[in-house]
Length: 261
Image (cartoon, rainbow, N blue to C red; front, top):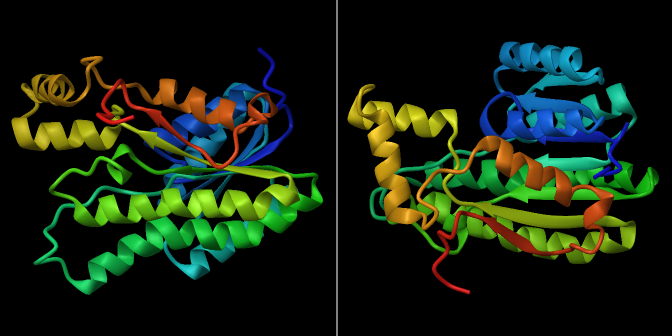
């Protein structure tokens, strides 16, 4: 299926590793140009160079922390300088948390709010006008199944991802007259380097795979983790003209993990 993404410009935050990198590579595979943002500029540069070499597209990296206004500004400026704007924005940068409500300080709440919510606000504010001038586009926010089915040990993550889902719905209503479609994705268990690292730390290198399988057995009726590539393909489809009637929705990619309808 031709997704109609050739020569489109996709901006992907958290794009140098894990889900973000998988999404950037999937866009490039479809012929799109990509701008990947990450705090680790050296790693982002390496991955951008690899993408350009493998897929024959323009791929640029921008070192920035999108949890800050300055970092968002740098990414917006990079999109304008290198591509004259963009057609697609994937707000993917984020990370899990581990705390209790009674013990977590205000500073931790604020840090996750800035990373998961304000980054999406600031980047949309800067990039959506550029998208509109190019004829429209798509914004996809990577939330989490924890936005609606929370895990007890990460209340800050749960709350800020829930806020990102609501932001997506509100943004969709505001941006549809600009011909910009906004949606959210709520992934379940996706095998990322972070999950492998956590399993290794908790169970040891010899038992990491057993630990991951036990997590999948407990939470996912499909009894396995999803791959980054499986999720990335869904991201790219939703950002393509082939998904042109998908607006203001939240899509679950979770192997049946969600327990409600």
